[in-house]
Image (cartoon, rainbow, N blue to C red; front, side):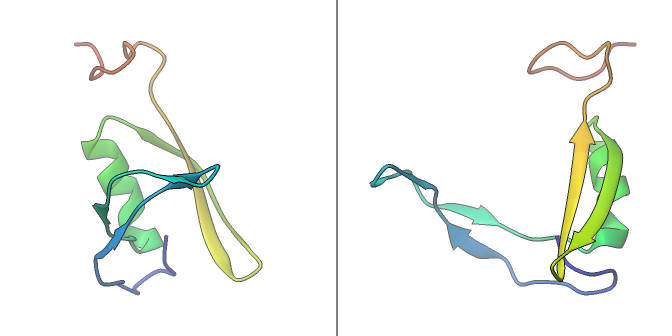
Amino acid sequence: MEAPGRRAAPERVRLEVDGSAGPWFHLRRVAACELAGLARRAGLGLVHAWVAGGRWFARLDAPPNRPPGGRAGP
């Protein structure tokens, strides 16, 4: 996540665990001011956002009635 009002260019990244690398995928960091709307459209809620060491972080959570891997119920 980026500071409010700041946009980062999309980038290609991959995760590495114990020396084994996964496939490359596209990642775009979002500005803090965009996060709540993006989370809502994904069926998530913004629980908390904070800054630590000059970096932005957020905790998102699914509603309790949302089935695993699915969208929230009616």
